[in-house]
Image 1 (cartoon, rainbow, N blue to C red):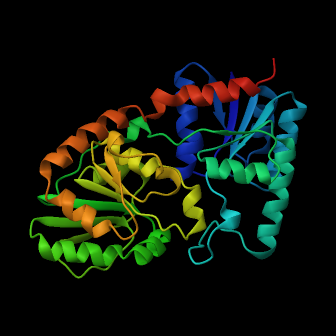
Image 2 (image 1 turned 45 degrees about the vertical axis):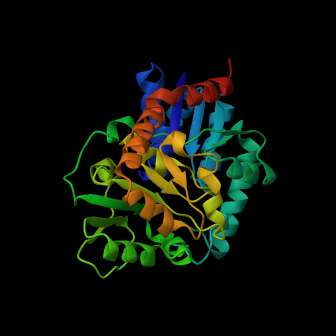
Length: 332
């Protein structure tokens, strides 16, 4: 199969939804080419060459033109998005969230892309339903999986016992709604051996055993996650976009053998101790963390289950989902 693909830059989302899966498909013998949109001659030739044209998230008139060219040459067109930024909560809206005329242009372009698409892919059932309601003709859920090459580095220990949370600034609403900073501050006061780390979001906890790690490139992520003894994934149910998220965060914790605690909404519904973690009610974060901090045997048991489940959540173990989806669209 010959695949031309256009990721939305080199963000973590692009790696999960485009670059990582396509690299794995190349390892399996398929021919893949990542397009350079600024070089018209290069992409024009690639669109004549490919059997499948796959686009992650990019949604503008230029991509509509590219999709038309690919289909005119006989290729299938597959569009993917792992978010619905047109419906993002304005309280957490930042770069990448369209507004005003830009938002209208994006919606118009997405509608045109849905008319052209042979298939739309997305990592969550919630988003799949959203895209169907917006006019996507065929939608397939393909979950996010852990990038194999990024789960090898190990970092130095932060402390005797570390609770960690990988969270971008957009998760501040979750932290505030669920009182996460207050919970962690109380636990730090009660347990002298405890350290708390956040990667990205600054909870501003006034304790020398609280460590805020600045955002790092995706290849460096596992080095920092591997210092955690418990990983957190709290989500506030009132933030609509949380229901559209993927479960990649707990998969990355699990792949490193780290037990996790997550909110029972969106991507985490249905997960639990079999996958190496526990689901926590909105008012239960202190109770669950207190119990896990004081139970090393329970942490070890969950860690073993997490590692076992995590090994099955790598891209290499699941690339056949992408392979089947794209091969099913390629025209004979």
